[in-house]
Image (cartoon, rainbow, N blue to C red; front, side):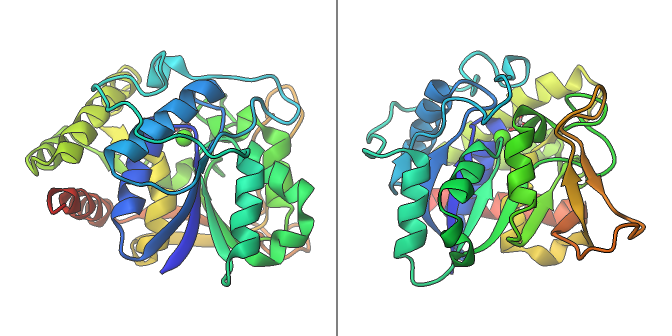
Length: 309
Ligand code: BDR
Ligand code: CA
């Protein structure tokens, strides 16, 4: 099993990513950490605890950094609501965060593991960058970083930048320059990982308590995207998890990617050297395509597991 740390800002698609990871026999979740992004750190941490309670995932869970490394915070209530996870009612947390911050917990898990850890960030990269800056010696014990962020063709929060990278571009820059192998699930692939209303019904029909909540999260997420002309809900963050479980359903390109940290129009852009203009080796496996039906089937199969417990 692949030992992983989940770091996210839940968030509807973060929540679905965690539901998928927790159900997978291929993944071994060693810790969960919250980051600020979709909402404030207080709200995303509370949501993390509520999600973990819902799916019975009781691993060490820690609260992340209060704000990005340098940039001013940006939140996304228009997409995820005031709570960061609006929609169905969720159980109150039945456990609490550990007595250390996210960076300390990540460092401890990585230090104590006998095999290299994979980090799965599905929010801004603040915690991960802070970890790498504080503990560069741990890099060799990090196998890879499978992240949702960026896009090598376009953005979603500005024309050039995707939300997670825009919120903390300096952190993203640290991560992309770290030398750790990166799987980049950016908008190029995640907007193809579309879940349509008929798929929501397939999930709802599974009938277990997690399935019903996931169907409602998808419905909530879709209602926002619908106003932008989408025909379904793009569950971005779940792709960073699916890439570990079923890499065979993805198409990818190995590319050198840099993060634009300044600029009037392109701050937060992930710029990929498609034409090998720079004489450098690729630093990221950039996911470009996905077998949508296989992805939906994977999700449905994962959610059905919650009916067995
Ligand atoms: C990303 O931004 C957030 O709103 C989602 O949770 C996802 O991680 C998509 O741009
Ligand atoms: Ca997210």
